[in-house]
Length: 124
Image: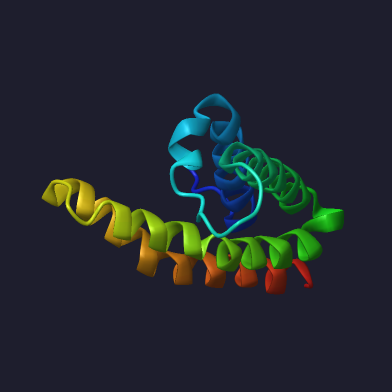
């Protein structure tokens, strides 16, 4: 019988997977960096990818899980402007592409709540 991954392990895997993709396929992330940020989009892609890798590792380790999960919630809030930029930039694309871009916006809230749940559960 297959067991579902524990919420903390799944959150860590999501963050580490996403952080890895920032380095393997950076152009897709560069494209959604808000222009108002100083420096190059690639720098922000690399910084956010490194943050996801580090936070994912912190969530994976029981000793740092509470801090890591709180940092994950903050990260999900911090990247919301990039999702808004993507939705605006993709507003003239195909219906499936717009669905992806617009769908990312309300998904931030469950991600934040998931991270906060992992933080709460780590305190037990």
